[in-house]
Image (cartoon, rainbow, N blue to C red; front, side, top):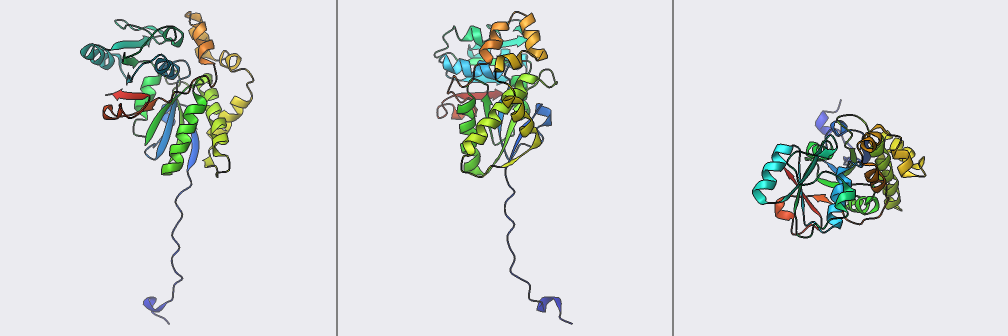
Length: 268
């Protein structure tokens, strides 16, 4: 009988690194561990659409906060424009609400903005431990998906699309737009091998493919109905525009604001 140390074992074969994944979290609390993920946070109605619009209108940087108290304190200390909503309307004591249509008619050149909303900014805070966070909407779908895919390839990270939802509940518009991002990422992959695509991403992609008219699809959702009832019907149409902007809002530290084109800073 051979002793253990005398046995000739075959050379060890290193285990390949785990394959990257593409998934959709239908709510931020379902995102799980994101420390090895590039995240795209979507609040189609309306926060991430607002952020893209602010950069289109010349805003140099956007600060986001998970609470109105933090946002208000910081904005007043710095003298920055304070934007945000409560139940869809302008939050008490704020300069503006959360209407991308309104912001599209204003000039924010050299005007930093502090934004706090009921869903989108909270979702950003909930996944702040990701390797990188991009903020996506229907308007900047292709630009953001390209940036996220490029970085995921460079660093070998997973891709996680995070739907903000509404007050902790699933929303049709976020899932549909998330499906649009999955569709775009399929296109970005091209000849490259796709990551492992989770069922959540497949389902959202099919939802996107089933809608020939994004506005019509979004209008079937409860959140869109609630906004329309509050007088924000024009915003729903605005948020349903696809691939009209090329801005890529990116969550960074304040020290990075001079090196990133569309910097977003999380206040804690």
